[in-house]
Length: 85
Image (tube, rainbow, N blue to C red; front, side):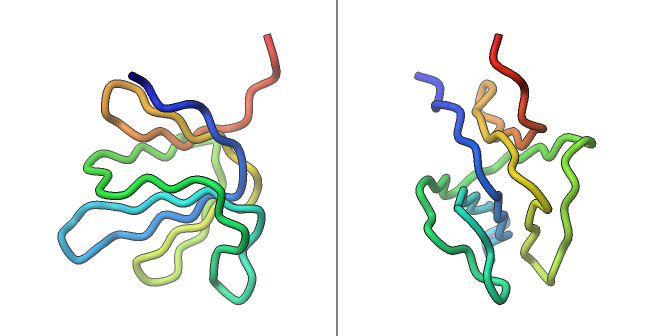
């Protein structure tokens, strides 16, 4: 079953085993995610779309604005927020 689409500030941490933890939160304060409301642990494939501005601090990447996070056949996608259809 596909994961629902979440929207928020996205924090991606690369773990020691090479997988990623993707957190969706309300904001990032002093480099830490605040009010995390969704997490994806052990993600093997994470695709950040080119239209999502990110900044990187060490092994952590953070979106500069709200983005969408969704699963597409086992790949966690971080994309620009799309309007409602």
